[in-house]
Length: 194
Image 1 (cartoon, rainbow, N blue to C red):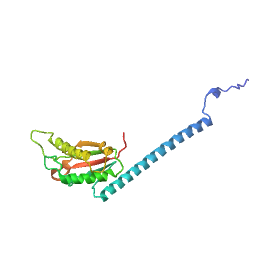
Image 2: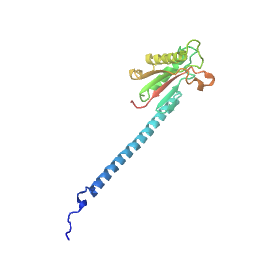
Image 3: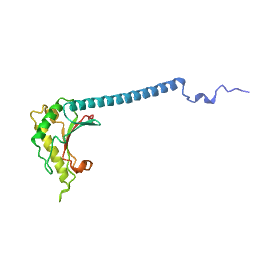
């Protein structure tokens, strides 16, 4: 009886212990890298939120009402910058407040964008279904023009280049009591550039 010294499984490429360990270490390094990335992202978000809260508090301490909304700080000009019904003329009281707000904004860390957003009442215009959008956009444009051209607001071209116009129409007027919503908001957008 002859014994075959050659086993059939000998040529099968089974992973060695070294292959197994190197694969395990590679996967472990990937896992740790992803974990570090997620932890740093969470920490980064917490730091940004803390920074926005500090900016908001600074503005409130200086008499500028605002709300933090995600990565944006919304300066509602309700009660400070008033517009008559179906008008978009900026009065002197509104100009004075915008000068004050501009001087405060100039001292803040720079936002990525400064959105000037206008609103309109829920009233419907006969024969013109777009009138509320026009009112909201023209109100925002009046504020934007003032901010852009303001000589004594304390900021320069760097802020002027970040101004953006938005008109909301009467979309949010239903949320406001009695449907009266002739305000303009200035939104400091601190979200990362895309």
